[in-house]
Length: 300
Ligand SMILES: Nc1ncnc2c1ncn2[C@@H]1O[C@H](COP(=O)(O)OP(=O)(O)O)[C@@H](O)[C@H]1O
Ligand SMILES: [Mg+2]
Image (cartoon, rainbow, N blue to C red):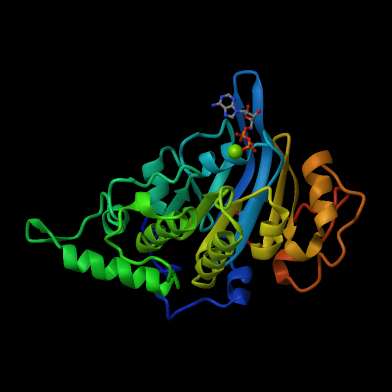
């Protein structure tokens, strides 16, 4: 079965799906009842999560809540003990990172996995080098690397032949994201991308995250920085002790309710506006725990 048919997001900068289209379709990625144990530790308990194309989903939660285990499960580093992952509406078994890569999932881990001693072009094409005959096509790779960075409005990099070691933290994040874009990723997952960044660089990375979503890419961003979450997210999903305690469009939350869910696993503050401007994905609104979104009509 060829999963790459039909309008791959990110592959054609001209053919952007509108936000409304993206919301109406089944989510690109859907987790249902995912449970993961490590011996006696139950890291995830029956978590559900919807990740739509063209939107930024912030995955929040306190230390130890299960954020990293959740994204490692999506990325094929862990296999769930129970539950099912759906990709473009079909059940999938992401048994290893190669399967994730084939589906179009790119994960940018905190330590970034860039090679300091290589330059930007070499990093962006690592393992996917362009050849002309049997030699590396340096010119073509350089041109494409430059075009991709320009396309993402990454303007602060002076030369694509700079070693990555000489870049700032924000620039390194940008290179990692550009690499994901060049791989035609449909889902880009970023683990705390702004954790080590200053104000201006954080702004730059968050802008980049928004541009990715505007191209139709689904983005999952892990953060426990509330400013970042509200600046960049369309949807917020909050884990508390391995359970998904809230998942809804950003308009359903305020910063106090996010803090409540992160620290207590519940909020007294209701969910004003959860049926507001967010379209069909928000239909159904708040249940007794506030925010768990209902099964969509496209549920498998
Ligand atoms: N490889 C592992 N072996 C055992 N326990 C783990 C492992 N990875 C994570 N855990 C446990 O799972 C829980 C969730 O961890 P994690 O997903 O890293 O949290 P965070 O939300 O801070 O990213 C924690 O209790 C952690 O100790
Ligand atoms: Mg973590």
